[in-house]
Length: 149
Image 1: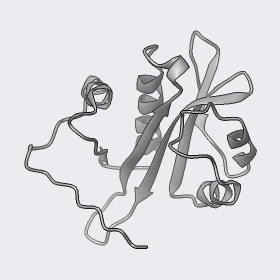
Image 2 (image 1 turned 90 degrees about the vertical axis):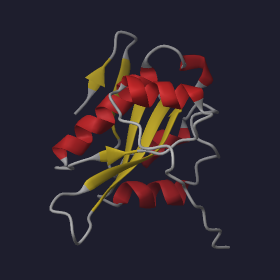
Image 3 (image 1 turned 120 degrees about the vertical axis):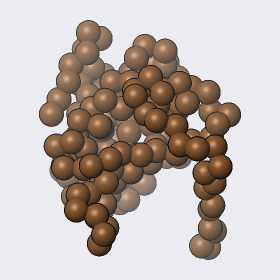
Image 4 (image 1 turned 135 degrees about the horizontal axis):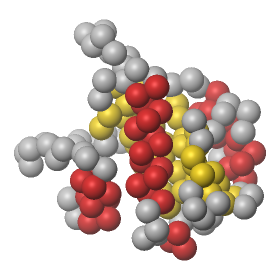
């Protein structure tokens, strides 16, 4: 699965042997600098997915996701962990294209549902997920974080 946009961007999942593409990522696509060993480990796991937008020889956007299995569900589910687009490429529909490519990947993997969490105050994310057809869950949903270090 690969999609070319009018701006000559290639939008597609990275393969296990393509970790070197993450050596050339726009500064603000990921929260932190890429750790090469973790990138290789992530891409080697068949349940981890990184859909990227490549322009020229660099990555200008990404969606990270995990398809996971559960003992009481017949099909896997797709958890979308993060969407990142370089500030220089925002407002051009790139986040939407990346998200659609990720949802298509989930369908190919046989996932029955995909989900993502965000803060209500993250207006761009709220708009992106709603425009992609996402259904907002009840407002009483709460996310807990546990520090393990």
